[in-house]
Each structure stands twice: as C-alpha cells, then as structure tokens.
Length: 301
Image 1 (cartoon, rainbow, N blue to C red):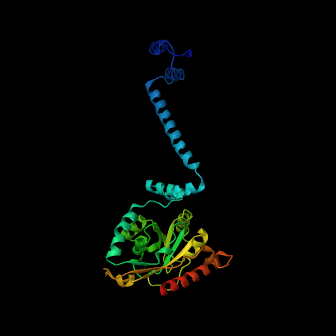
Image 2 (tube, rainbow, N blue to C red):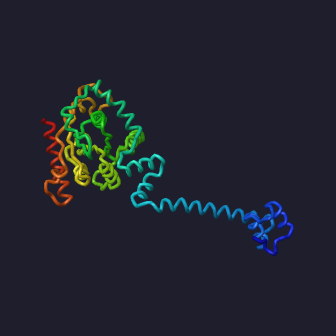
Image 3 (tube, rainbow, N blue to C red):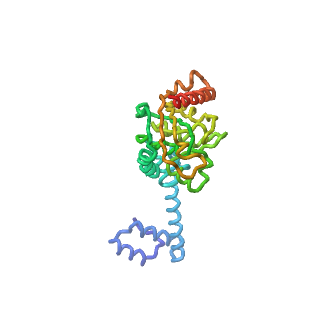
C-alpha cells in the first residue's frame, strides 16, 4: 500500500526501514492521522483515548447482547439471581435439579443423628414415602422443631419449605431460612414469586414441604399445598408429628428430650385432590378439605 502524498517523507522512510520496505497497517494509520492534521502528540493522545473508549463500548455491547439473547425464563432468573451462587442455582433449575445448598446439607447432617438418638425419633410406615417424582408434603405444625423433624425423616430427598414471610425479617432466622432454600409466603397475598419457584422445583421432580395451618397450633388450613399439588400434578403426602409440642412448646426456649413419632399417611394423587372440580379455585378448596381429612386420618391411624 502506498503512503499518502501529504505524509512527511522522513516519516515514510523511517516506516519503510522498520517494516522492511513495506508499510504495515499501524504505520498506515499513523500516516492517515498526519494527513488529517492530527499528527501532533496532543491530537494523537486524544485519538488514542477515543479509540479506547470505542473498544470499551463495543465490549460492553457484546456482553449485553449475550443477556438480551437469552430466553424469557433465563432473563427472569438472571434478574432474580445476580450473584454467582444465584446463577449456579439457576443452572440447576434449568437442568431439572434442585439447588445444591451447603447450609441445608450441613443442617440435615447434624440433626438426623440428634433426633434419632436424643429424641428417639420413630417413623411409622416409611415405605409409603414415594422414592421418586414430585411430592408435596403436608404436616401438622405444633412446634419449632417440626421442620428439623421433617429433614431427619426425608434423608433421600431435599425439602423446600414454605415459611412465613415475617420470619425472614429476623436477621439470624432469615439468614438461616434463605440458606436452606426456604421460600417466604404471606397470608392473604398472591405470593407469585415463591409459588413459581416451588412449581419449578416440583417440575424437576423435587419436594416441597408445607404446614397448611400457616402457623403453630392453628386450626384453619391454607390452600397453598393443594394449589401446588394440582398445578404440578404432584402427589400429596400427609404426615402427623406427635411429641414435638411436648419436646419444645411454642413459648419454650430449651427442648426436653422426649420421644417424637412421625406417622406417614397414604399418598394422594393429584387427580383425587381435585375430585372432579374443573375450576382451579373449586379444586383448591376441595383439595384443602381433603388435606384436613387425611391429616385427621393420619393422626388417628
């Protein structure tokens, strides 16, 4: 490539000598800058700064194009989970797997031998627990020990708990619940985000644990468990926990090591939960009444 006519001859000779008689691309660019009146050092520095800014902008556009090219569900999860661990959990959900949570594994590893030795935990009819497939667990709620009891019973499954939203406002308790993957729910609210995550876990063959009473020692049942089982076509497994209230009352601070017994009920398929109701609201209401009946039958079994 020939040099521009307005380029200084001395600069062209130096370039040809350095590049073995041929103008390289870098030298040609330098000569073009000289021809446009930007050959002085100050203008060359300004041109270099503009070039670096252009490269940074193009690099930023390339990164954004990666995210804009993602599908809708991937983009939603990127917004929800911006941390590195959140992205890892998102990949697990896309593969149909439950997130790998170290706090949950550590807690389960610690409480299982404790409950089987100190509380003499006894499980009746454990063969009724399904070995695979999506599962919604419903159990009575009498003590703060109930969640740890369920973690001890289900050693082959990783449970995702639906917990009251106000518990997440407490610094230590909220940090622990988030660590084990619990989802916050609030009464008389849609809880769209938590229910979507629970449905995604069930779609991957996971397990969701619900205390349908909505709190300790309540009578009225909430419809979240029936809704999840119907929407995810998951089996409903009723459990009755006996002895947890005596081991740790709601107002107690220290537990007493009394025997805890867990009775496993008969799994209820999703088709039986609806009982022929075609509308979702009617099916959820019928499923909630069914949950009340099967919990009572499990308690008396």
